[in-house]
Image (cartoon, rainbow, N blue to C red; front, side):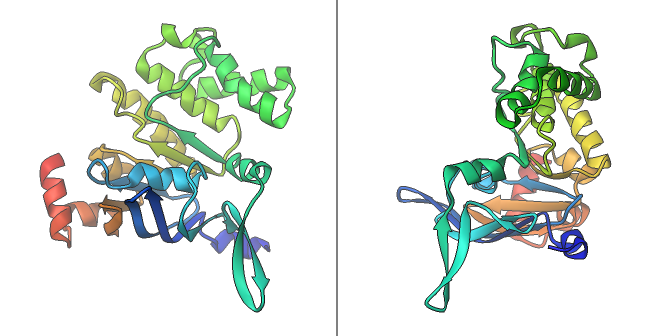
Length: 264
């Protein structure tokens, strides 16, 4: 892929994606395009498929139909032409892990290792996955913890940190792998209201630096202020999408209007 193609290729392209859990049809033909350097905010009621979509992008869930590309690379599969027709074949888990290493993901629950300090949590993936030397990994971890405002908490264990501080460590941990794309799955929903702002502040800084982000959230103010694109999902489909202010102020769909009336 030449430099021009790379520059114009969307960071994420989702086409016709379906996902079943048994008989439950969770994603029903989802289409989504996220340009590089943009912030896509996904909102919708609980059970609408938002988190499942993120997990499919990151190959934590295997899709049942459709295709997902990140930076032009087909996720989870290789495509070959057999008997004149393109066919998809599942990649080896090692290759899927390589693809996943390019994507940072921050979950609702912080999922920090409780027996490791903040700096050790941030160091772990580069050391174990990439073989980075411990001294180099620690230097980078300290830099990232400073970036999220935790320079004075590097040797604290998760139990010694507030929820907002733990979530900022989780963001630093995701950034330690130098991802091309960051996924946030309701990163503030487990926090006390007074701690939400400190996590959103870090996310705003990342957006200002040009990080491509897909953010599942109920924080409508964040969507309005930081988002480049707003997507409303319900019952496994994209109901409406567009510029955040346009969707929020002048929703075209009745389902969107009903949802916004409950959350605004």
